[in-house]
Amino acid sequence: MNEKLIAEAREMLRTSRRPLALAGAGLSAESGIPTFRGAGGLWRNYRPEALATPEAFARDPQTVWEWYAWRRDLVAEAQPNPAHHALARLEHEREAFWLITQNVDGLSQRAGSQRVLELHGSLWRTRCIVCGHEAEDLRTPTPLDTACETCGGRIRPGVVWFGEGLDSQVIAKAQRLVEECDLLLVLGTSARVYPAAGLIPLAVQNGARVIEINPDPSGMSSMVNGLLQGPVGELLPRLLP
Ligand code: BJW
Ligand code: ZN
Image (cartoon, rainbow, N blue to C red; front, top):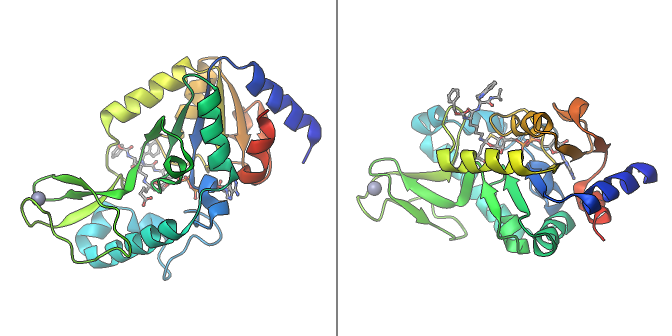
């Protein structure tokens, strides 16, 4: 890794008045959680994009639930990595620091982050497709035969699938945080899924600087001020004092 780039990014973070982070699946890769796209993303020959849709759930809820149960059980056994811990430290040390995450695994919260905005929901919540009742469900191994405790209807994971809108308050808050930040850390996301990816050009338009950490350039790398190419668990802790 280029030491000069690290030193520049470190300085940008040190002098930033309002840093903010936007994370994707790569943040949890070093905890052993597969990313969606690229190597290791497949589960039983299904592409994640084909399972993370309301149509897949309507067609075959059993298979979709098996995929979520597998992921929940994997996450329950996994541990937050040095990048999750660095973000928790950053929140502790910098007033008004927020983490906007596309991840649904809850590993950031387990590392101690509290100001976390979950754009795509959580693996640890469920919602009834009949009455809309929402509940926290932390059970592992994940039972596959659960029904809604209120109406007995079919429950689904409390996540946001393709074609579904994000919670309007959550995305509005994310956009406000981005407009107010002066430095955006883009961590382990391919930046291909909207509206999350659109937060990066929004930051640029509002004059913020952008540092990206990813082993591979993302869809937005051309617009960032610093691209640190490598694993976030190794590089992010090096930006902190
Ligand atoms: C490392 C690493 C290491 C590896 N260190 N890095 C505008 C234009 C075109 C399309 C649209 C648009 N606006 C909306 C759309 C449609 C659609 C969309 O974006 N489609 C695109 C694919 C083109 N968006 C939606 O449908 C969204 N809803 C919406 O917009 O509603 C309004 C609307 C409705 C209908 C029509 C139009 C508008 C909803 C999106 C929901 C996404 N849901 C998922 C599943 C969540 C639940 C679950 O987890 O199961 O969210 S899909 C999946 O992708 C998941 C992720 O959060 C999301 C993003 O992926 P992410 O995190 O970037 O992961 P990867 O795998 O892609 O990348 C990992 C990265 O890590 C890579 O870059 C690696 O290099 C890197 N990495 N190891 C650092 N150690
Ligand atoms: Zn119900």
